[in-house]
Length: 116
Image (cartoon, rainbow, N blue to C red; front, side, top):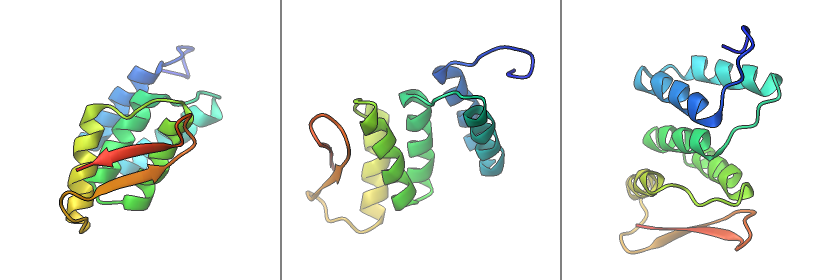
């Protein structure tokens, strides 16, 4: 798509990453992200949300929280679907029910609250 001169938007990239997620093709997704980054495209909330959901389903806590930081830097709250994935990930990681997870990011309010 990029090679023929079309610039993808964030939703298009998110859809492509979702397709890779369904077939568990992390290496191809990473190659796509590297190619897009080399072309100067900056990811948006839609793409980061798909990546957060994928990393949360894979129980990769550090990677998930790093991706949440990128969403926070853009001044956005994660979509509701992401909250569900995060709650599932934290519960499987041993966070006690009723305990909330607060992740400190660089957002105007300074943090993103995730309550499970």
